[in-house]
Image (cartoon, rainbow, N blue to C red; front, side, top):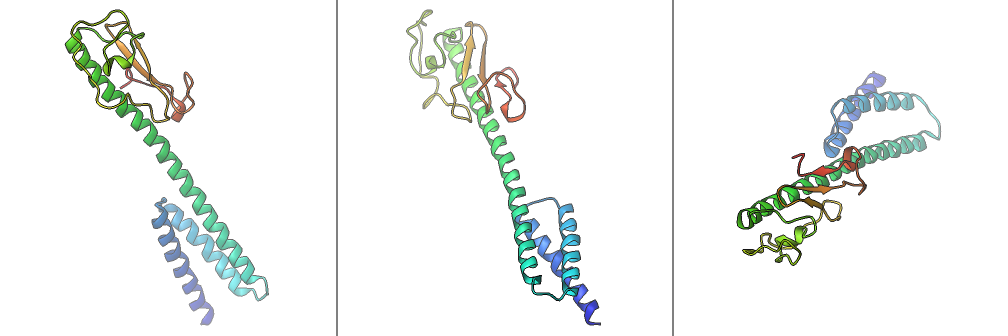
Length: 185
């Protein structure tokens, strides 16, 4: 009878302990069941053993479980961090596009590559010099991308492209290292 009660208690402790930890770390629920089964099996096995190392083994397995949970949580946070950098970059590109469109409405063309995005803040001094510049067209400073790099601005005056080279700062790439362009949005 004592063994059955002990098995039931181990199962409940394993399940509720896993449920609390996995809700705290916002991890998938199927991992709760896996964690429950593993810890239930370990606790049941260790309760049958009677040796001086049982406490050490329980502490070590607990530390290992917590280490795995922290590692999984760090991976989740890193994924969200990279996504936030890309979202910030897309938002800044959209903001720059709005300012460029306002510039185009007043001047009749976009700033050239040589004039750059600086033409949104101060009147250009490089040809073609606009006669009816009525800026600044962008409040504050010219934003940087999510990785604190300058945007690449390409324009012939009639069309433009704003590019961020992503996390690696180099042309091409995939995932977080992929280029983000105003032409893609």
